[in-house]
Structures are given as C-alpha cells and as structure tokens.
Image (tube, rainbow, N blue to C red; front, side, top):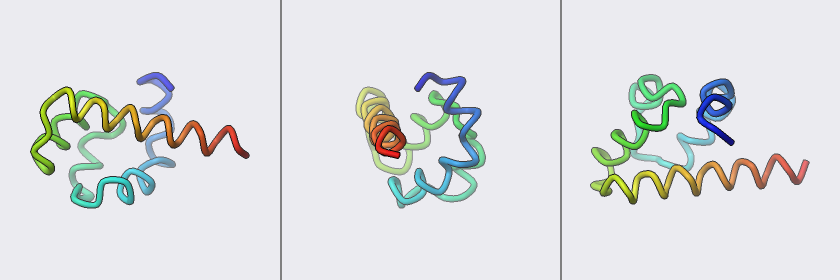
Length: 72
C-alpha cells in the first residue's frame, strides 16, 4: 500500500489505527490524515520512538491491514 492509497483510505483505516496505537488522540489521527511523515512524527511524540522505529511501526500496521484485506 503506497502513501496515496493510505491517504485515500484513511477514513476507513482511522479506527484501526486508533486501536493499533492507543496513545494517539483523535486530533493526532485527524492531523496525520494518512500522511506517513506526519504519522511518524506523532508516533515519535507519543511513544518516544526514533524516526526509524516509527516508520517500522507504520509499515507493520500497513502489512497487517493488507493481510486482513487479502483474507477477505
């Protein structure tokens, strides 16, 4: 899933992201709006991740979403 697809599906994925990263607020998710660089910054703030860790977490989230979609 590339960045454009993530942004396009963000409204659908927002709830899943909230479950996946419980420390993110609704404002964090609204601000991110599927933009990976903004999301990485929010994860760094809320979880104390390094940039690389935040990007790895986003990739893990995307892989889980894609895995669930392919099972349907």
